[in-house]
Structures are given as C-alpha cells and as structure tokens.
Image 1 (cartoon, rainbow, N blue to C red):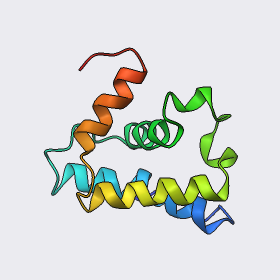
Image 2: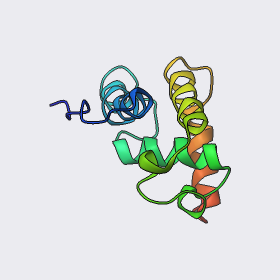
Image 3: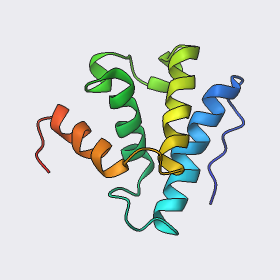
Length: 105
C-alpha cells in the first residue's frame, strides 16, 4: 500500500519521500534481498546520516524533510538514486551510519 505523498508542495520533498518510503523499501523486499535494511526509516537514517556526515538529528531539526535545504534535498535524492543503481554500496553506507551512532556491525 503506497503512502500518500502528494500533500507536499515541494517536488523535491515529494521525490525524497517517494524514494525512501516507497521505492527503496519495495526494492529491498523484492529484487534486492542483499540490502541490509528494508524499512523506510532505515533508508532515511542512512541517507540523512551521510548527507550530514554524522547522526543527522545532530545537524537537522526534526522532521528532516521539513528542515532540509533545496541543496540537501537534491543531494539526498541523488544518493538514493545512486544506491538504487548500485553506484554506491548500501551495506557500507549502513555500516558507517551505525558507527556514527556508536553501534558496531
């Protein structure tokens, strides 16, 4: 069941949420069983942590999608697309995100 995303007037917010809430979880549950995460909040954690080079909520007010600049949204969307196309290693990104949070893989 798709979550309604058309409530956001900013097309970059809509695209970021579509990718992290719908597309990436759908791929993880279907054609990408090698991905280390499946839930939307996990994809958002990984993308946002890498955007901020650390724990995202130490750098952005919550909710992040309402407090990101246009440039940050574009960077986040770009990272999502690179993950989807296998241009970056999601396992490595996840491990780094967890290390920033003091969790060892």
